[in-house]
Length: 381
Ligand code: CTP
Image 1 (cartoon, rainbow, N blue to C red):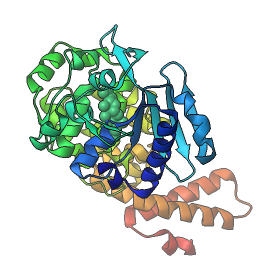
Image 2: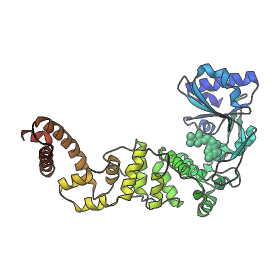
Image 3: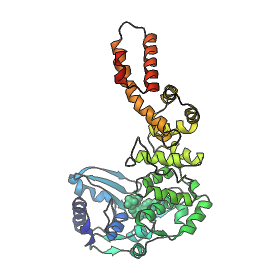
Image 4: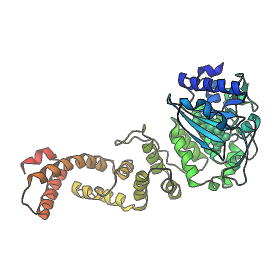
């Protein structure tokens, strides 16, 4: 059985559930991305299981294997955190109906057929019946995987849930698929489908794209689709202060690469990205004079005074500006030197007034920054 290709911890959970489902005679299915990745022979990330019953019924039988769980009455969905470190989603199979494009659907309990029909793409709409191990593939997802095609399942899929436009690009780049519905997607975008989404939903999709190994390719595709405009020259360009292993750098790089101010502002005005990051991007966007001031300045001490008021995030962003790169690198080096210098020096001065100490420190900084003399060398003062 294909299920046996799951790693041991996931397999343990799936077998645990299979036994309970058999005993209670409940129909249950492995659904979505896990089936797709098993068929492709890829590592399975998340386990989603759909039941033709309320998951609430199952939880008491597995509770001793759990650290904790959450249950949402409204959607009959549950997330289970197991003692072996795995988390899975257990959901009630359902039918969905959209009242407003871009909003959330109303749901109604149903069977696996309806549950697979409500989904985004044929490759994500396969299931494995946990009672007999059979693959259920009403929409020919397997064939599409083989032929490297990404296709929607039902009419109005992109209009009702335009996050699927971002998802289409994500999967196309991840698995090297051709998006069969590209013309329809372009039409939806032209008709303003993206504008029906809340900023938070857009940002969540963007962050999921930024988590991908193919994040730069995906952003270029979104650029071609005209969802936003990016400067491809700076996309993915190295940054001496941080590495792209850190998703935060990818956010800042996208921010810097975006050409339209309204696109940049999406990354600032949402409740998903951490406050400090938004603050740094906000200062960069709305207090633009720092770039001009830095460009005009060649004196290290004056550069130091300008950059001293900046945040680290701002400086990481400024580093992509070719003209400012070395000024920022220099500042970061000197920042450490001057800190050591100030602390040691202040400690060693007794009986001087605050103003005198400030003046001395200022002069030391000036000497250090303009001559390149390091803090340690200035101890004789
Ligand atoms: N889904 C959907 N429409 C969405 C989001 C999700 O139909 N807008 C369905 C898809 O069937 C998807 C499943 O819900 O396979 C789970 O979604 P998600 O966890 O986002 O994706 P995975 O398929 O698990 O893929 P991955 O995490 O590998 O990106």
